[in-house]
Amino acid sequence: MPRLTIHHKTVYRYARPVAFGEHRIMLRPRDGHDLRVLSGDLRIEPQPMSLRWIHDVFGNSVAIATFDERSDLLSFTWTATVDHNPAEAFALTPDDHAYFYPFFYDEEEFPDLREFITPHYGDPNGELSAWARKFLDAEAPTPTFKILSQMTHGIRDAFAYRKRHEHGTQHPLDTLQTGSGTCRDYALLMIEALRRLGIAARFVSGYLFVPADGGYLGGGSTHAWVQVYLPNAGWIEFDPTNGIVGTRDLIRVAVARDPRQAIPLHGTYLGPADAFLGMEVGIRVISAAEQVVET
Image 1 (cartoon, one colour):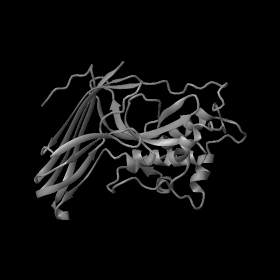
Image 2 (tube, helix red, strand yellow):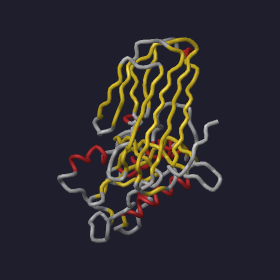
Image 3 (cartoon, rainbow, N blue to C red):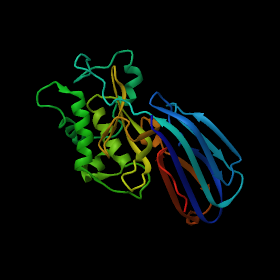
Image 4 (spheres, rainbow, N blue to C red):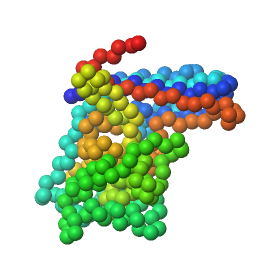
């Protein structure tokens, strides 16, 4: 079972001391049979007046910090060690009714999946629906895994990854029409496309582990991908940015119906708009076999 350590530091800098509003921190990995958190340490400077942990509506761990002093710098340092046991990517057999598409969800599960099946973004001209149907065979039925795998790899191969300075996640139609976006944009595009096929899908936020290769020391980054729910298989991961199926190299932190509900770090400050100088983010995800040399 691979053991991984996550080092995540975010620093906000200001031109003058400002006051801080509430900050919500969503960085703790989600425990499960394939991922176990062994230790976690959150350090905040300046030290918050209060820090409490809650489970949100999806069961994600969220730390909420409030402050009573001003500062020209605000930093969050999160360190965690996890045992990561990548799950089998696809466990269905031809005897399972969800092995082929179209399929139906059990009437007992459907009420809990409804919001993950219902599209949440407009598609007035049917462009997104038409794009989703391109992954279906001309004659039904289509193997479900074929749809999911081809959509995952189709986004990776046909779209251009680009960083955006705008806040938030762009509309799925913008991603489709421009053929470009971030990992969060790709995930939302795939989610909304699958929902138009009646397949339950949700957003995942977490970390990507980049293994060491030869003399290269591995790294990591924050990341986003998709979970799809299939009867008898449960929630399965699909990463359209890297073409990953299953949880290999993916460390799950939060799941949500919409990307806006899974922001790793969110808060406000009280002061003039021009006081904000910028944000710095540093992330390392390393295996137990790697050695970190401080310089």
